Length: 147
Image 1 (cartoon, rainbow, N blue to C red):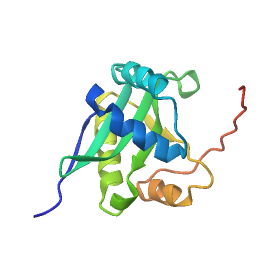
Image 2 (image 1 turned 120 degrees about the vertical axis):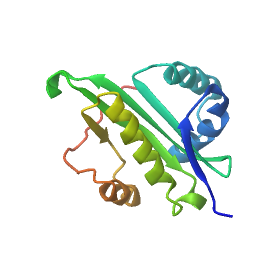
Image 3 (image 1 turned 180 degrees about the horizontal axis):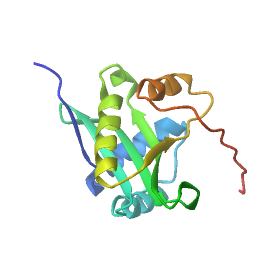
Image 4 (image 1 turned 90 degrees about the vertical axis):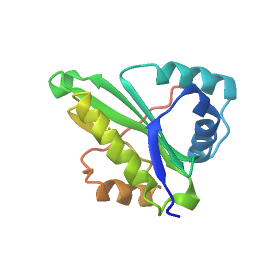
């Protein structure tokens, strides 16, 4: 039997899986209550997209993307991928590509002009993934820690 990858909108019921994925992505353990409140606020925001990937009905990855109308883009709606995670055991199964393909499809329906993503410099395999998906490395990102 062929393994079946299903991509769907995330729901409140997906919190525990996504919480684990975010902790693995960031190599830390975030406070569960704060994360749950943020997740529940985010998934009902119509400018945000949260998708979960399932392989044979088991969660194996997710993507979150936030959009807004930006003045420096002429008021056009621009979306930025906030998190993309695929379980390491499933990274060669096409899960990430399916998540990005579905994200692109939904973004077009939402009249989003452009998708953007920032990725830590140390994640070189992730950079290659985005390049394979036709993302262009066009900017530098600078951060300033306030706390």
